[in-house]
Length: 90
View 1 (tube, rainbow, N blue to C red):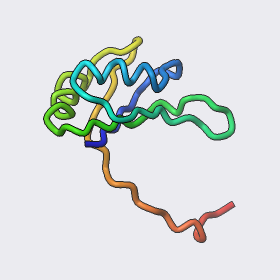
View 2: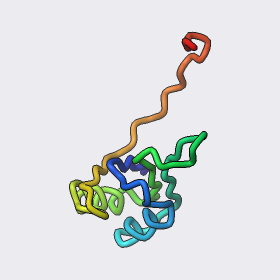
View 3: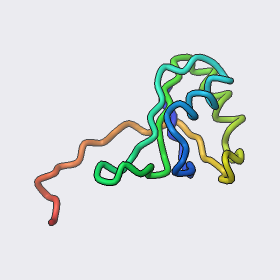
């Protein structure tokens, strides 16, 4: 199950997400999304947990929890929608 985690402190890294979520079960991958130009965290990330029940437990326990001074939000990630880049305005 792929989880969307938001309202993260900019200092939080992939390893930190791994440590937080591994308390609830096996974590396959963690990725804090960073700005491609500045390298600064955009305040959200994704965690992949292969066992659905473990992921649901993590959502239930971590939703709204204070992590480094911020109440994080955790939910099931929505499928990625490819956008048509030809319609992009510059």
